[in-house]
Length: 100
Image (cartoon, rainbow, N blue to C red; front, side):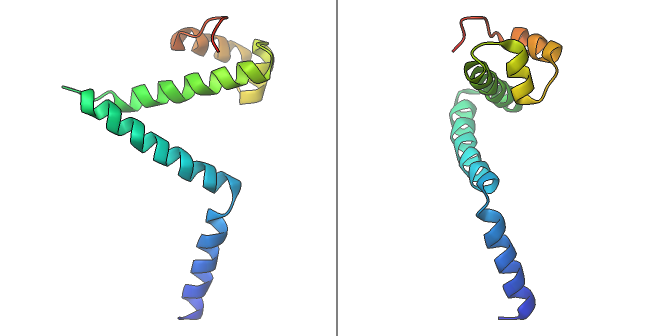
């Protein structure tokens, strides 16, 4: 094995061992399952991207609300977005006060 190849292999292993890389791998596998389910019911133009992104956003918003004890400004800060943006997206995603 060449020196260059062993260096690349080591870099790849290190990258895959970070918490973010592991989380991304888990998420990708779950999204693959979701895409399979949604594409099986589709006929016509695909809305797969929009549907999956809305699911992810709703999940993130629910998590942020729970972790902030349903204080919207704290939930927005947790997600790193503006409070007004958070409120607008909540309405768009159909999330009410009792979501959770």
